[in-house]
Image (tube, rainbow over all chains, first blue to last red; front, top):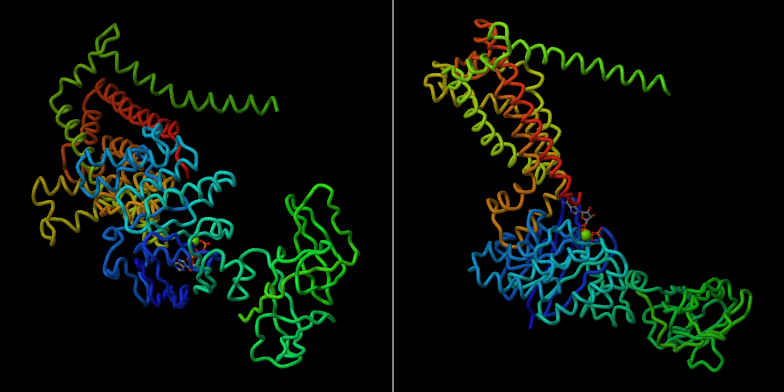
Length: 353
Length: 262
Ligand SMILES: Nc1ncnc2c1ncn2[C@@H]1O[C@H](COP(=O)(O)OP(=O)(O)OP(=O)(O)O)[C@@H](O)[C@H]1O
Ligand SMILES: [Mg+2]
C-alpha cells in the first residue's frame, strides 16, 4: 500500500534548480534511505516532506492526503536532525514530552508515553538529565524518542549519525532500524554513507544532481547499478573501457584479450567503446577458481586491508582491482607477477549512463 | 620582564587610586553631617525625604517597564533577524548602535518635535503619554546593550534548528518563542536587564527635558541645594549600580556552569 507519494517534485532556489523530477512512492512501514554526495539535494527533498520548503512543482501526499497547504506544525511528521537540536532548557523527559504537551494531551497520557519512549531508547535512568550532561549518542536517541512520541505518520532523519564517532554510529544505526521495525513507522533516512544506507534500508534512492538516479533494494543497488554514477558511488568498482569486436556475438576486447559478454550489447558497432563494470569481489585468481571468463594481467600493486587483500593488475590499458580474503598461510601476489583472474561473464555489467 | 611587571602594577595602582580615592572621600564626607563625629545622618535625611522615595520609586517603575517592553521588542526582533533575515543583521546592529553616537539631548529634542502637543501623536499632552514617551526613550538608550546581550545569547543556540524541531512537533510561534527560545537566551536577557536598570536609574537628560519626577533630576536638584546629602546619594547610586553589575556577573557565571553546545 502506497503511503508517502512524491510526484514530479521540483525545487529551485532562485535560478538554481536543486531537485528535478523527483518521483517515488514509499510503502507504509518502509525504511527508505536517500543516498548521494554532498549538495545533491537530499536535505532539500526531506525538508519539502517536512514542510520547511515548498516544492516549486509537483505534489507530496501522505496516506492519500495532499500536504501542499499544510504548514510544518500541521503535518504529522517526526524529524531528527544532525545537530540533535534538543531544547537546552528542558531535561530528557520534558524534551520527549514536548510534542505531546503542544498537542494538549492529558498529563497521565503524556507521562505514560514518555516512559514508554524512554524505555524504547533505554534511557529511563537519564530522564532528569539535561542535554549538556549527555553524550552525542544519548542526545540523538532522545531526539529520536522526542520525534516518535507524538506518533507521527512519517519519521524523517537527516544524517542523524554523522556527528557521532564510528563505533556509536554503527550501534545506533542498528538501534534505529530495530525501533523502526518494532513500531512499523514509515521512515526516510538521509545519509551520504553508503555502508549505512546498504546495511539498514529496505530501499535506497541514489541521488545525483537533484535527481533520483536509481531506486531499489540495497542488493539491487549494489549488484545492478543502473547508471555509471550509481556504479561508481556505491561500493568500489572497476570501470573498464572495452572495444567492441563483434556486436552480434557480444564479443568485446579488453587490451588484446577477447571475451564474450552475457548481457546483449545492443545498438553498437564494431570498433565502438563500451564501459564495463566489475566488482572487486566478483573474481578470484586462486588455482581452480570457478568462472567462464578469464583475464590475464600483470600485478601493479597489492594492498593488505585487514580482512581482504586488494590487488590491482594491468590488462592492456585497463587497471582492474580484485579482492581476496585474507587467510593465514596465504601469500599475496607479488608486484610484477602474472596472474589470471576468473569470473562469471554475467558479473561484467554494461554501463549505459 | 621584571620592570614590565612592575610597571603593570604601578599602572593598576594608579587606576585604583584614581577610582577609589574620590569614592572614599565622598563616603567619608557623607558621614560628617553631625559635627565632630561620624554618623549616618545624611543617609537618614535622604531616606526620610519624601521626594527621594517618590523619585526613586518612579525611576524603579520606569526601569521595570523599560526592561519588560525592551525585552518584548528586542528578543523577537533578534530572533527574527537571525532566523529569516540574516543578511540585514549588520544593518540592525548599526541601528541599535545609533543611541551611543547620537547624544541623548538630540534624541529628546527630536522626540519633542515629533510628539509635542500640536503634532499628530501628541504624547506630551498627558502625563501617561509623557511617561510612555520617557519609557520609549529609555528603551532607545538601552538598545545597544540589550540587543548585543540577547544576540550573543542567541548565537550560543542553534535558533533555526530549534525552531524547526519545535515546528515539526506541532508548536506554533508563541510556544516556540516563550518555551523554546526565551528560556535559552535568559542569561542575555538578564544581563541586558541589569544594564538597562543601571542606565534608567541614573538617566538625567531625558527625564529632565520631559519634566518627569525621576531619580536623575532629583540627584541634580539635591546636589545643587544641599551639602552632605549629595554625597550620600552618590554612594547610594554607586551601590545600586554595583549591585546590578554583581548580579550580572553572577548570572554569567551561572551560565558558564551550565555550558551549551555552540
Ligand atoms: N535555502 C537555500 N537557498 C539557496 N540554495 C540552497 C538552499 N538550501 C540548499 N541550497 C542548495 O541546494 C543544493 C542541495 O542542497 P541540500 O542541502 O539538499 O544538499 P544535501 O544533499 O543535503 O547535501 P549534504 O550532504 O551536504 O547535506 C545545494 O547546492 C545547496 O547549495
Ligand atoms: Mg544535507
